[in-house]
Amino acid sequence: MSAARPARRLVAALTAVALMTATACGSSSTAAGSAGSTPATSGPTPTSAGSAASSAPPVASSAPAPAGSTSSGASSAATESSTSAAPPVKPTTLHVWMQGDTLKDINIVALNAEFSAAHPGVTVDLQEQTWTDYSTKVATGLADASGAGPDVLELGNTQVAQFAGAGALAELDAADFDNASTWLGGLKQSATYDGKLVAIPYYAGVRVGIYRTDLAQKAGVTPPFDSLDALQAGAVKLMVGQPDSYSGLYFPSQYWYEGMSFVWDAGGDIATQGTDGKWTGTLDSAASKAGLTRLKAFVDATSRGGNGQTEANDALVMAQDQAAMFIDASWKPGAVTDAKTGNPKFTGKVGVFVVPGTKPGTVMPQFLGGSDIAISKKSANLDLAKAYTKMLTGQKYQAVLAGKGYIANSTSFKPKAGDPVAAVVVKAASTGRFVPNSKNWSKVEDGNVLQNMFDDILSGARSVDDATKDASGKITELLNG
Image (cartoon, rainbow, N blue to C red; front, side, top):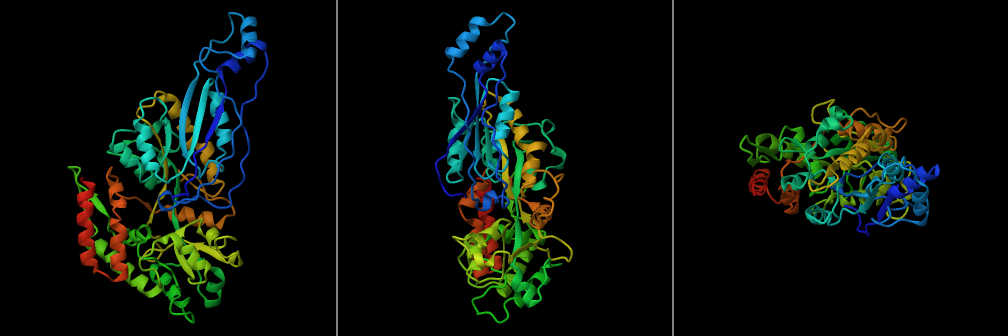
């Protein structure tokens, strides 16, 4: 989640009164608030794994005049207008809630200006949000019957089922949106609830292997690795001559996002849903336990000092020269070399690779984080909300994101030309997986069920059999609650 900061309102509009004035006087008007964006230096963070929001540029524009009032210019125009003048357009406000992560990079100013030009009289009330306590704010906003709640809203992909299950999101038709046949599988899964499309994929985030290129070259370790065994051997080789506290590949014990990759790679899963709609935890299945046993062996061989820790400080561990590799979001190399919080002397010495699967030549499945765009079922402006969502998630503006290193919502977008990180990220995203699509999933996350299970197993506090039996029982109870 991103650091908390006040939400700010960005308003982009063309008013009905101004348009009438322009028509009557024969003058041309300029769309409000168009500005360029600064190229991103790194891609987005996975929503569910912590994201650093970028700030969007302010939008200088005007809102529609209050109903029943006119400006002096409008009064003059009305006096001179003839019966052939365009009929007045009823002013409408479309409330849009977005996280700050992509606003600058997608050039939201230009997007809003384009939308306003295509929909005269519509004000886009864009409110930038933060992830902190966002679920609570969304629940309140979607229940608001005054019309002040969001019409269109960005949701982390693990949040969609919670609000869809509460009946708060509008059902959508994939045929109304661009690239539906090539949406990323993990995002499409997160946008679907009970067989119905309730959101539109926006962008994704995925984890990759991150390593010190100088140390790898010195040790004769050459990513990419063909298999998990090869990765483990390389990590062990990087530990030679280092202190006992040094990690060849740092892997904290509560890191459930990447821990689940080992479960999926072995054919296991968190839970399955029966034809009766009931969920059953399956972390205690033979396949899941095989993946967890392999993970335990991998961590024992390659990682030091991660017991009781999450992945929050893995970049810092590398920056402090305590690890040669770790696995996390594709933007984390920048955190390693950050001048204030990292170690700038490692600039140009941090690379990325696709995490390999157990079977040679395969890619390890990765949890596909990211965001979807949903529409409130209570929206009084459903058609406008769909049109805005189509523009935001459509070909033109998704191409803008893809060109800046993001994982766009469709497999039709190629990696950013000349960007080796983007090529790795797109390949890693091809194996994207997702959590059980239950409205009660947040209870599993909030209850730290997976964090506790992985911590117990990787720290050696409990056996794989005992920890998975307990976790599967809790997951079954919570998902069906």
